[in-house]
Image 1: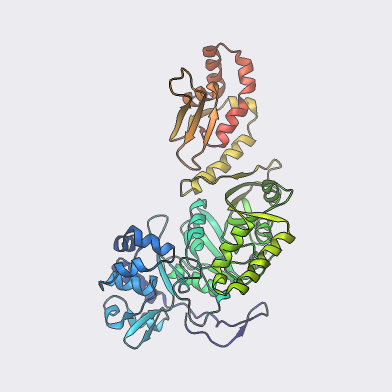
Image 2 (image 1 turned 180 degrees about the horizontal axis):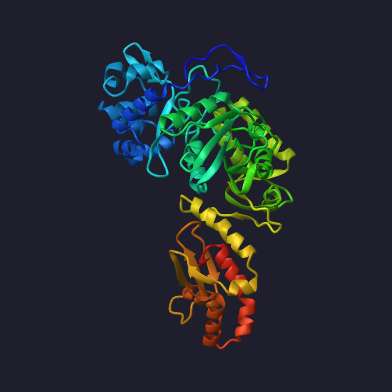
Length: 519
């Protein structure tokens, strides 16, 4: 925090226009500020109650007018919303009754301008996994709506901005496996959202970033939220943690596939989707046995190659992986999205056309026809029969999805160690909130087909035959799969041996997709 100073030379020899990060404020002063914010109900729930759902949602779209209209009364909470979320000047006399004001100014959270006070950083209330009142600290104007927000931090180069929490951050936080671990790594930490989440279930949290300003913001985020200070290290990708292994690695990397590296927070600086590929390929060298890598990613759809095969090939040997594509954009849609994010649509027709053309040229050279968005989870198992699944799933899912992702990998372990005979000797139970739907023409005596639908996790639906429906309906954990099939064979007048031979494949599918669970 604080004004920009003269250029300094970074560890990698490059020259930056940004000053070295200042030391953290004293812990007792940070705690006093946190207590004051919470006392004024400057929390996620408090802001939602004050602004209402409509104005609160508008903030996520970088639209501030509804929130400005809702905060005209001058209450302590309204003053804090204007100060930190809307980046408006607030009278010094009004804030003096709310915050430890002089200490906050001295520590660099705020700056006084005559009779008014302005924020130097964006402080955004954020709800923790266990209902904690946390705060994400970032550059002004960057907490929502990309870097085209209200106003950015004076004196800070656009390329060095540190963004706050957004849709990508919350998605990654929701899909992350939260099993207690000894060591967790937030790779490319930004403002520290993932490191903050990891602090609840990891004994030690390491956060890395190429941008030294990001590491400072991460320390501020965790300090203001009352979390233990992380081990912060500057550097690119896994360079700062060479030779070290972690039980959990999470990353919301600069995954945008762009023709250049203009913005540290967005552009990876590698050709195409090589940055995401590199993170996945190198992860195994930094994971403990059973450890997870979870990241958001973009990947190219190239001519003559199935995207599933292409991304699955990134997965290292000895690792299971689940790759989920949530959205696809053609190259023109993709270029337009990130041109707007970079403000290029405001640069004039000729400049915009030139930059647009550069994006399309880069895609043409790489024979890229579309770009996929999604998430990748890799688990190091050491198995010589790894399971790598890549699928498209644009449908709504249940968040947090982390427990369901962990269960998916557990089911792969189960299926890998059970041949057909062992599978039939197991007892299963129907998963919670699975329902059966019968589909057919109105008035028909029998349905055309039967569908099992899950209302939890990925919220899948799968078509089953009469045997599959009957089998799932009887699974209550008391009978083995083989005994259930024998009973169904007797009921349908089928050969029980033939039914046992042809059904395990269907049982495996029901297990893999989570409709039934081994007891």
